[in-house]
Length: 358
Image (cartoon, rainbow, N blue to C red; front, side, top):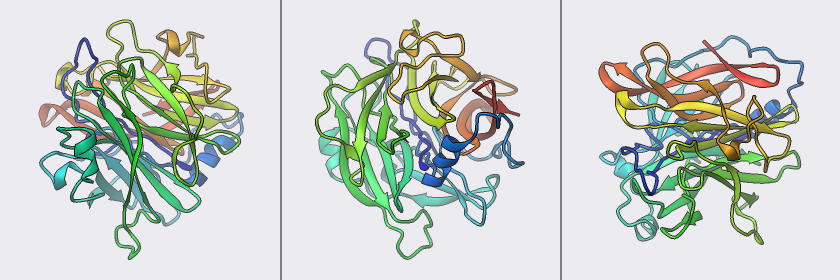
């Protein structure tokens, strides 16, 4: 992400499974901020509590994307959104959409047309890949994604790399780099919904998780993009809410001395019965502890909600951020009740906290 902007795939809790979630949805959590992007967020002075320059506040309603991973463009560069694949198309691989202005989106194919064979051995029954995250480091784009099945935490986070995001570039090719992290049915966490952030020293970290024990984190290393050696159990960043431990899709942004942890709370993938909402907490350390605006620790169910139902939509979640934009999907009567769509909000800041505009 500056590099990063994550996306997510969800699985059901072990005791109270939610309805199937097209995690990663249709365009999603592969949110990549380019390295420059994250650097802008990190370096932004605290006094700059205003919105970014005028640009699209929301994507058109005709783009169906779940858990979008956004890479902002501008300055002659195109915008990209990566998302969860459709099991019936291109072997369920991660989808890609492209835009010249951040408003008018067009399909740009899939990362692959056939899933890597090792995924079926690691996760029997996997049909599609979820919740992508794209992060740029030293000229390489790292695409993290989830492979799982609904209601199970036998899951893996995989990795692919590329030197360009432009499908028309002759060097465009996503190279399979294998497994990054895994969970099994004996784990108390779920290895899905990866989100990457670099701390102030340039060390990369991967937040992940859905249901079970909540949001977890491991330290990575460059240039492999995989976990650094010598770590124990993944760190704990946030626990679920009291009503079912419904928390997922972590995405962390470093800005003005704070790390902001964005998560999705509530029920996804249930059409008009969805209760998804986007919440945030912050910390002065990338590893926490994170607290919400009221001071409630996120390990104790805290989280300040910044986007939920509005207008025709009944829920919003699966977020990623890139510079001053937050991409997510919402559910509403968009043609067919319960349909989902890509939305992109401009983010302003007030009192050191994010405030979606529009």
